[in-house]
Image (tube, rainbow, N blue to C red; front, side, top):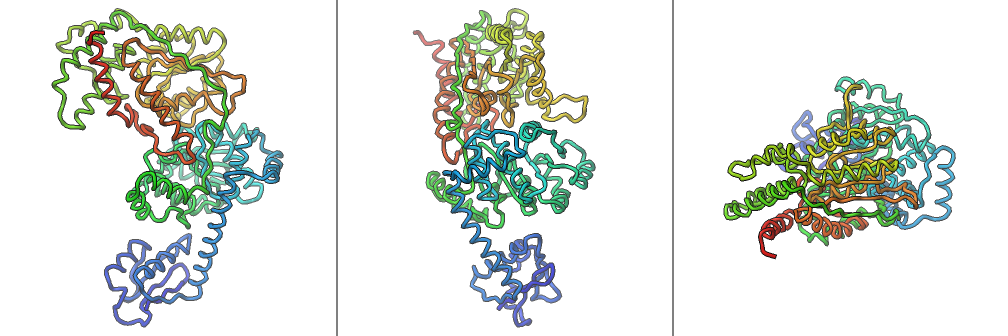
Amino acid sequence: MIRIRHAGQQYIVEEADGVGTLILSQPLHRIFLRSSVNASPGSYADLWQIPVGVQPSIPLQKIVDHFDKYGIDFLLDPNCNEILAAVRSKREEFEHILKNGLAAKKEITASAYKKIESELSDGFRRHLTKLQVVAVNHLLTVRHGANFSVPGSGKTAVALAYYYLLQKQHQVDAFLVVGPASCFEPWEHEYKLCFEREPKCVRLAGNTKARRHELCLTAERYEFLLSTYHSVAKDVTDLVHAMARRKYLLILDESHYVKRPQGGKLAEAVLRLAEHAERRVILTGTPMPNGLPDLWSQFTFLWFDQKPLGTSDDYLIDVQKQSPAKAMVTVRSKISPLFFRITKSQLKLPRPSFRIMKCEMSPLQGRIYRGIAARFLAQSKESPTGREALREWRRARAVRLLQVASNPTLLRKRCDEFQLPPMDIRNLELREAIDHYAQYETPNKINVACKLVRAICGRGDKAIIWSTFIHNLEMLAKKIGDLNPVVVHGGVPFVASSEEDFSRELLLSRFRDDNQCLVLIANPAACAESISLHNACHHAVYLDRSFNCAHYLQSLDRIHRLGLTREQKTHYYVLESVESIDTIVDTRLREKMRLMRDVIEADLPGKVPGYWSEDLGDEETEDLQLVETHIKSLFTAK
């Protein structure tokens, strides 16, 4: 028999008779006590001391579950029984929330709708759509909830409306946002729109450790704090102390960053913060970019004391032993009441205009393209035999063709975008032309892009030019320098480290706000998340595209978002080099978009192929096989 009693800031677990080593001396139980509840031996061998912690029920429940699992009798003192009674009460409350949450995500009563609108009307200036009001009501119902709406659907405004209502009810005093650095400016901007005043906020990330420590000590001066996942992982202790002094709404923006259910430092950090927050919200349009395991940390963050998906070990085992379809159904049934989602079709945005512009390659460019393709065809018998080596070999060939179809100058530049060195052109007949290509001609696509952008800007509009390759961005900036373009790519930091430094945030702000800055030139990988440009720009020109459908869709969403008027038209111009790999890319992207549309429109969006990849995407096998077929077709009689 085991006795478990609550004594101040610790639990005592001991043999009931106080003598012998019948149970607690067994390695199984000793290992559990040390590793699972941070226990340490007491004054004699049959007594263990366990710290109570911030949530007293958690270690106690673990101890009880462990002894129940192995059929060991135990006695609880009155304090322990009271704690477990509170646990049962919380579980019943959670079951009630699940029931109501499921109903709240489907519909909202007229009285609830009017109540929310009325409570928001006296201080919240942003007009919310009906779906956004339903989303706010869902958060009020479930208390700790998720919003998985698509990019551009107004998730930030929903979260701020929820905060405003909680603050009015004296449920919270302030809020803390954890997300990528790219979300800082959008949160500050959205706050201004929602409350028509400057935010009293502070950015923790980007400062020295000593400065972050100082800011946490004076956190009461600010209405909200902004930090990145990596900074939070370093500042957990300071943030815990700051959160102990006030009631915080803790928001994870782009919450898929904490996807790792085991061994992830980012996930461990936010899970530790979770128990110190009065309310918790997660926001992302792609909750599981790599699959179902991504969900565990996010929903455990929301309800750490109830664990909707169970322990991480049990969850991963359950997901792996079921078929993907069955596992999805099982997981969705457990978490469906806790998340809300607005799909792209529900936004009812005005339909965008797409214009495919076929461009003949410049004469020398066309010769180089066929020369490179002929070399690849001749080398086909030299392909590696190993699967991974063959994939990398084919991938490099595809990237080279993408480069030539865009701008042959790229062949002699290091390609950081795809981790490729300058191309070895020894023994190539056109090596002299490639080495000095820029001296002979300008690729036709670049001339067309510049002419098109000048026409757009000449009408008083702004434009974005997208290209996969950084060298193209810099070349375009020189050619249209009189339009005062800004250039954004992965080498530009998100946030400035000092007033003199430049950053993506400052450059994007300049593009949005400066009437003299008419063009943004960027690669999709650098502008994937948390960036809204739809109020400043309605024209996007694609100089080139890769096979990465996720990056392509994300770039489309930068200017096609909630907030457009019915009369506002969004225009996309896609430039394609004739008889080149561009045609293969277009075909594959169309196919992937059809498949991804099912994912995007789903109630719980599944794995997004290529989301975390900055190369050609997850479906490379079929992509690369089509590229090989294209190379052969160039030399097949028609």
